Length: 364
Ligand code: AMP
Ligand code: MG
Image 1 (cartoon, rainbow, N blue to C red):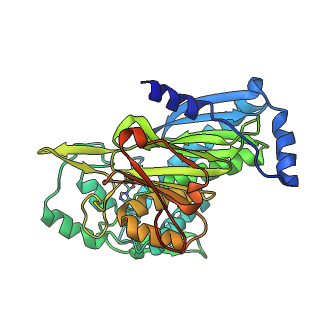
Image 2 (cartoon, rainbow, N blue to C red):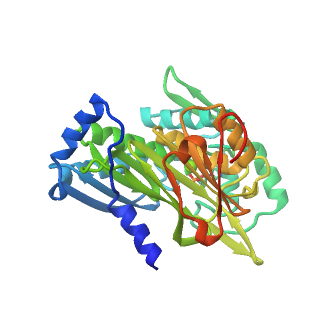
Image 3 (cartoon, rainbow, N blue to C red):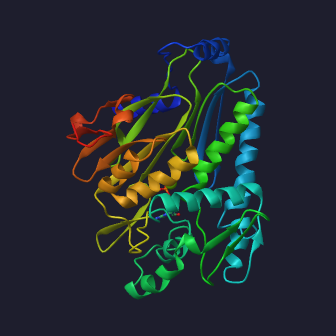
């Protein structure tokens, strides 16, 4: 209970520290220091099927939070698979029958989704919807294990390569009847980038928000300290395995513990291995991605969970725009070399072991 309270305190009143020195940082500090608790504005809302919480420091905070909420609802109306008139629903209804015109945001999120698919050898697959639906995830109905025959018949329909995008006229087309897009693995990351851009444009220099656990930090806290964000213990929702100290980035976690059901005593979760059609089972309990690019962080957290540690580390070694924390089924908490510089491991009491992976290979 003690640790739970500590976790809530960390999430709700995250702290900031200035390190190093640069003119930019000094200017940022000057801007920050004019804010205090009286400029603190908070909001909790429910959208995109999840709870969203905002904390911002700004004299116009109240109006800015209304603007942020409107932006989220605008994107939800475009991306939702449950709203029949959303652009994504229209694209899905037209599968195999032709192209649909899209807004800039829907086109962009699909484009980013396809790119992350290519980067991860289709471990991330925005066309996974038919399989996700067969399991009963996203439909809101009963969840159950589909037959092997059902999965085998649906797998050929789940390949984002058969989602054609035409940049010139901003249209998209699902080439096969029965195909459908599911943005569940990327929409919140894209939305967090859009909200961050909107708030920054309106002058916000300090804020933190969580879109259903997908955290985005704007700047640092008014006292100049970095935000502290807990990485949850996937085995115990009241506990965490460590703390990240961050500024200006997104911290996004995917894990089988976040949504699942049980059938005949076995657990089945919502992150699907697009090669098999079954919940991904590659030795990971959770993957947390830290990146300035929230869309990528969201897509990659899902993809790296599907890929498993070895392939995930290989991808990280070839990339320079994200860091990661993995929690494995063997009880290890593994930080990439960069993440280890701003992560404090606190899982010892629960028998987790801590390791770091180096860019040049090797573990310590
Ligand atoms: P996240 O919580 O970001 O890891 O996203 C999980 C959600 O993404 C699921 O609820 C599905 O809607 C969708 N999803 C499941 N498996 C995949 C996959 N392999 N690639 C892309 N999206 C997926
Ligand atoms: Mg994701």
